Length: 200
Image 1 (cartoon, rainbow, N blue to C red):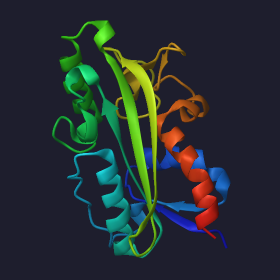
Image 2: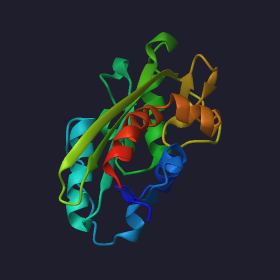
Image 3: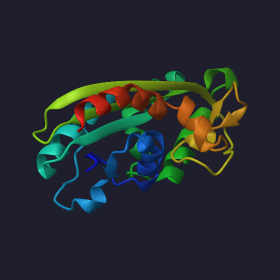
Image 4: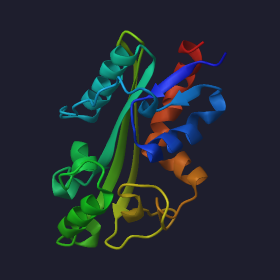
């Protein structure tokens, strides 16, 4: 019987991406929609790692399963690192992509194009059923922010995140190419051998 790994998220788009990246491992992946006893984890850490650890550990203890907790976001150095760990709730409401993008674009407008460099960060933590964290992995992907959205793929800031080498945004790139380049794809690449070793 294949092992089960619970993704510490209710974000269906994030779950779909992780399934596409790890789906060939033969692990059954669930999200938190199947676990009503899992409460909302307060993401009050000041780093991506702190939030990822908290999501993995607290959720694993609540449901008694292996959990992959992940925190990711966009960093614009010229904006002092914003939106950073507040990426998903930058405009105030968790997961309001349109409002988050409006706020970010308004701030970027004052910057010259060469100051709009940015990078995505993903930190993922793997915790066992007792809440003990067994692994922490990181991934990054660099790019440049644009002021008009391009492409309907991805989510979050993806239509505004241009990968210069490809002349396309994350919203335009195919899923296969995006997963090879992205912060999430790179973080989970580090996790693959660990999952093979730990999960029966």
